[in-house]
Length: 183
Image (cartoon, rainbow, N blue to C red; front, top):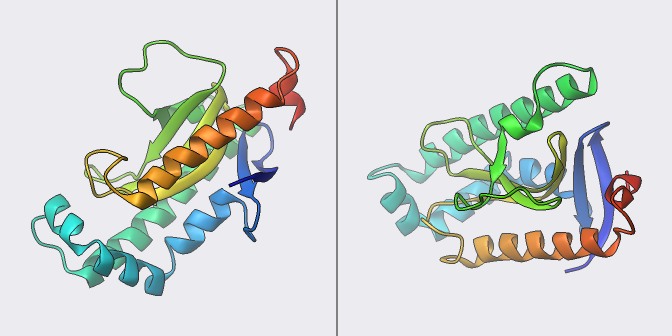
């Protein structure tokens, strides 16, 4: 997978990667998929065992409905905070994007991050690279029904995309301000 470009979703802080061969940047792509009832129906039928382990009983039709509602709320929340940041508000994107690994004790210039859906037991994840308190580059997203990202191919692909974007950003970095010159 190769980075094709970086798109500004909201000026001043929220950006999104477009990979070669994709029509959309990742922020747009994941929320489009999470609103597509046919895609979700197929996903939950394929991963029905994981869904049952996540929720003791939830019909596929209900999982599709919950996902679509939650995705709309999550997209609105991320965009609302990003717009507030752009307008000088007191919110920041680090309120919603947290370190990918709970073991992270040191903040690097480039940090793998995730935003979870807004429900208490949410399966939606938006993955991003943190460049600063209010600077994030979305690399993808997934429906995570397992404990770790290494248990399913679609989650492992998200880890690979995070790694690829980290390499890309580090490669374009010529000085401390090099990352922000991309935008």
